[in-house]
Length: 407
Ligand SMILES: *Cc1c(COP(=O)(O)O)cnc(C)c1O
Image (cartoon, rainbow, N blue to C red; front, side):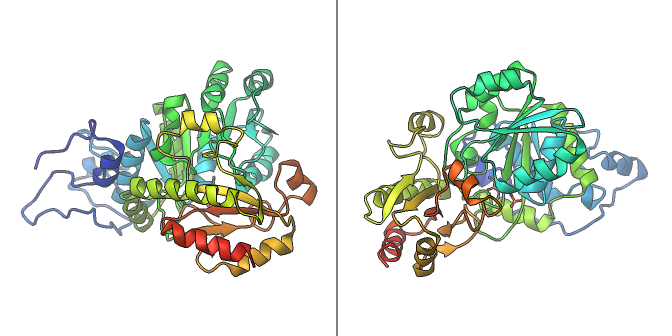
């Protein structure tokens, strides 16, 4: 079998075949699926080859492994595929989304005396990472509303070293003007990092919009089945990729062969799942919008969403993602709990992006550490519910929401 040339393949094909056989068939035959390499150590025919393997590559350019913390064939295959999917020069995988974000911020050059400008409504633990780990190291952290139209002027004034954003915010699903932010970051020489967890490369490839590093919590849509925790950083530049690998090795948050295998298995169906997530979410958003017990629905696919046009430009040709939030007419914690307790299909879960529909109450979960006033300030009301729309039959999802809403 000839070694396949992946370059002309479209994303859906790459997802299915990107981790396929290497084309080095031996007498015993080659498995169609990469086996799990459960070994901490790799042996080589001679000391010279081991010497090369310790640097990760043979003179032929083939990857080589020596010790588990430095990498394994399953993690390598996942890195290779993620790099291709996002159009980067390569990727590094980590044992969680947070480990990936930590390494990305370090690789971007955050060190004492530097400054990072980040969106104020980032994923809660990312804010905590900036405040509790980076600020005490002497890094200036500026959190602000980067979803507003003056974002370019703001970045120009602040002159940061790193700009960090999420494409779609949680839970109000605001959409960032990626091109404007990337251009503004570039103009001041800042490294641009974007958390693309909610979009996935199926909907959007931020490197094409000028970002330097793309991070994902692969725990969500990339894995998609609620059975593995993982993170990935994709780099647009070789220099950044090199420091990512240095941090991956020295911080020790390597992704295990088992988890790499599960994420790879999940990726095979990413395109199909995203297609269904997006179609279901749009239908659920329309249903909720006309429901008597619902005050407001936040979904970029609705024409009333403040960034609907921007979202259509960035994501719209394939869909608007699987995540939405809505506000109950009864703006009270008790009403939210009653609704959640009456659900029979949608799971009360603090995660998202899985095949099953998942509901969370941000004041209890993702935005728990904020005061009521802080939450009001960023628009998260007491009746706010976040819904990660799964790939079940959409009528079953809608019926479940309906019966719980009228209780
Ligand atoms: C879940 C999540 C993270 C953190 O990822 P873990 O895999 O839980 O460490 C970061 N960013 C976003 C947007 C997330 O949803």
